[in-house]
Image (tube, rainbow over all chains, first blue to last red; front, side, top):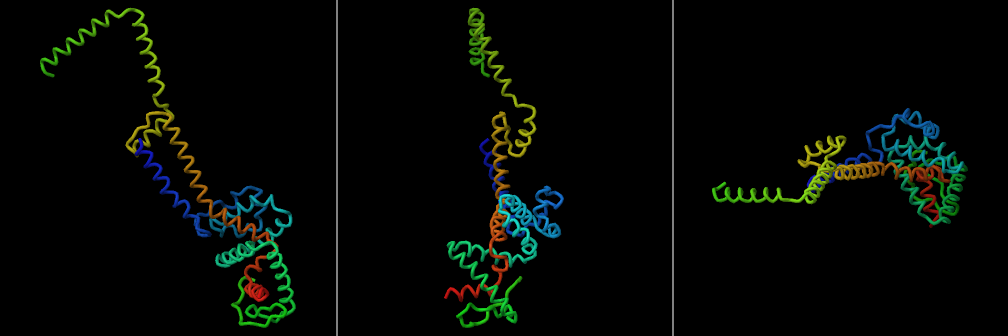
Length: 158
Length: 128
């Protein structure tokens, strides 16, 4: 009897990495659930993705379903931002999404005052870009009082 | 069996038979009741037909038989728990991505702020 239990538990644990391996981020080939299998509420929340849904792999579909589950608890402002950004986000390359996540997590880890400063800096940067329309992505504006320094690589996915 | 052993066996069984004939009625009743109780307990441990196929299926794989309902129930509980664990592990990457992406897509900063290398340079220069 003991051997039977050991064999059974060993079998189940050996099969666990297979289940986990499906989920290397954005690499799963299984493509369920289909759009038609979503609930009415999920379809309503994820409506901006209806055309792209067929191209998403299983991990990304599960991810969007998990986001849809959080959606009702979001503020109206956050809900609006999410709806507007969904399609742009889905169209980015995996490398761009990975880079954006890394940068987001770096900024998120800053103290609240530093984060507010980054938000202010973004608005200042936007104004600087708008006031210098002849600048190319490889020649970004510089903060007031700063001398131009060697060029940075071109921006992606503007 | 050898001759002396055969003789000894006959003598023992004869002695037991004679002893059994001499048991008083009260003792006989108690023995009978005890036997019936033992038979009832034995019947209760016979596997329920609904679980029999599962026991046979596992015994084919493991070479062991599951003689009691308790083992079958314990096995079912372990299987359910491990299946739940496997599902939880497989959903891990999606939930992890959902946590990050939900924060990123609802953040005050737009997506471009995290991708714009010009803004990255702007921040680095501004912090000098």
